[in-house]
Image (cartoon, rainbow, N blue to C red):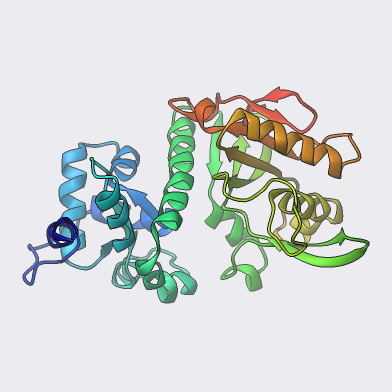
Length: 314
């Protein structure tokens, strides 16, 4: 308890008198990246910034003291239970979202009014979200080094959709046959992005699933249980029905799954072969955490549903 109190007092309780803040372009970029990514560590934000990590850390400290960014209390759990050094995780506050809008950034209503809800997020949610951010940061940095390839952000995809979709989450619906009857199921990707090959004028779109190995791949006894194969079946049927094109104007999509181990990749490959009558599908791409670690995101090898090794730029 003493340790928890010490950590909270030092890192999670704002001072009564915050340090003066003279807003800079770097501050606005940091806020904009948090609006886009939802949660990010100081290290991830520094990587996107490209400047001195120390300067980014000082900027985040001033933004936090002035209530423009949040240090989520849920991360205390890892610091108290596991001890050791952990990067601080930041999120945008409502005040930070309004500040972005005041300076001309297109901040959607959902962000303005729901941002503070993540303040009470638990550690498992925080870890999951930061894992998603890690992939997206690696991808963005890799795309910066390619003159022939451009990253299409989720916000750009939503902006290109019908006006009625612009404040919605990206969600796909599909009629899926379960136990002999059709059910309307939905799936919300962990992240959505596209890649544009500038020379070939070709665009490819992706829905990212960051699997932490906490749900079964296939259904067990409980008919209402969430399991990963149900997600894949929903994506598969939504693709066959053209839901992605009707709802969001996407000409194509593939589902990227980053999971924990090679063994779990093999289980997922077997599950998608079963739902495609053993044909497999190029719709699904799989990799594991070890294959992704310390790699250029565009050079990571993925296994598609037919067993072929591909990269995102293929």
